[in-house]
Image (cartoon, rainbow, N blue to C red):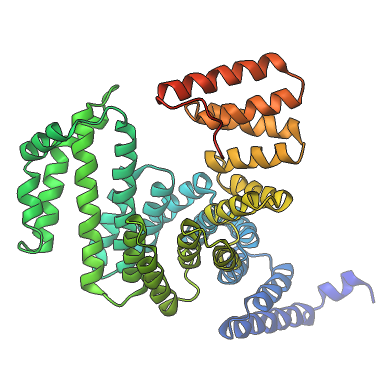
Length: 439
């Protein structure tokens, strides 16, 4: 009996449907037992029998839950090709892209999920995280605030707000350098903005009221960022305001869930910022005990060890972070930096290449990768990476010094001399002697 005859018989579709049901049941059972790899295998088989958007979406969710983000991206993209208006596929495709640091690609899917399901608070939260990752802190804060207003007990949202405000404050502060107002002028500006009174009100006024007052102060200054040449004094005040709002968000986390992993993570970050690494490690370990699989905690511990020059301990923790999140650019960078310090150059180059691959604007990682490539005598690639680094940060004298060495090795004496001249001029501007940088 031919295949065409079999397909035309009434019993064949029922047998196919029975097989599909069995596959879906096995996939769901595997998912219930957290065997996401087996679940994905069963959904793949099911998708061949019935290549519907729903089954591809289920496949994507199984891959997502198993941290197989590239496979999840492929499955969700296929679901959306078949049915472009599936909000869950847009959301989880966006989150999967976010997880592997493809933020610009993630953005339209977060936005579309939010449009398709306006009541979906998760979409707003992830949209805020994506804007923050792209450095659009004003848009990030706007989305995260909307998300928090619907779920005011959610410490993950408050943690994200803390980080967004803190990063915004840091970026504005760095933008000022070296044009920041002197100490006397800072004091006068803060008095003029009424900041001293607000700072004194912390712990006295209700938290909600104090936040509103800081936001009111922010609204009087935020337009300074819109001009072609932002006013330095206004930028300084905004930087201070965002720093204070970050502290208020952290305070709320500690009030709502003082024993949560987010609370300990924030304390660890605060202690690390003050270079109190022993206390930072203690807090990070408390957080890790509460959330062993949370991304970022092993990195925090490893980074603190790196700062303490306890490199063996740092490597162990950073490798654990990469087991959870192999795409973490900073974990790959620090590992690469450690191996470069140890002159294990091939290993260093592999980690640094991954860091740059997932975060192309990571200039310091690109510089160190260029250095590793030059030590491996791959001068052509080293020159290319260092040229890109120099274009992104032309004020970093060490990049020009490294480029001079690479050009010299390539026999490009004119280019080498020009880079040395740039290096010496930048060093002179910093009022330092012309000593080659260590890094």
